[in-house]
Length: 126
Figure 1 (cartoon, rainbow, N blue to C red):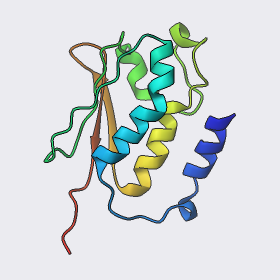
Figure 2 (cartoon, rainbow, N blue to C red):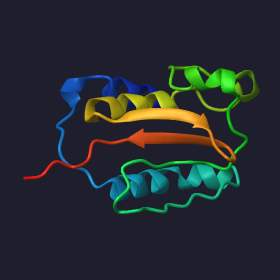
Figure 3 (cartoon, rainbow, N blue to C red):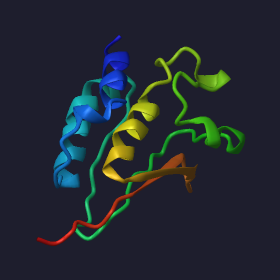
Figure 4 (tube, rainbow, N blue to C red):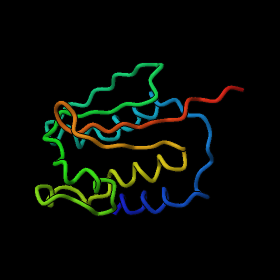
């Protein structure tokens, strides 16, 4: 239920007041929020930040089949292998938040697991 509320809020542009954000701080907040879920699933979360980077994120999980990559940002979509986990909203929420900020999310198979690249606009000068 909470994910539906977050998705509804993230989908409405009038709910945003765009301002510069420190990606490292935002990602740390996400890690802190997800820590209990990760611990429950015996998943280790780590944050490595390159101050000059404008894209990031990879996991070491089982990955996503190539034929499913085009659908992973769709609301409520889950592969047959993941029907019992979650509501299929996590990555669609990420997409809804990224879009008004001018970020582009791209999913691909990584060396191990899923790799999502968030291409961010470089910060504009004063």
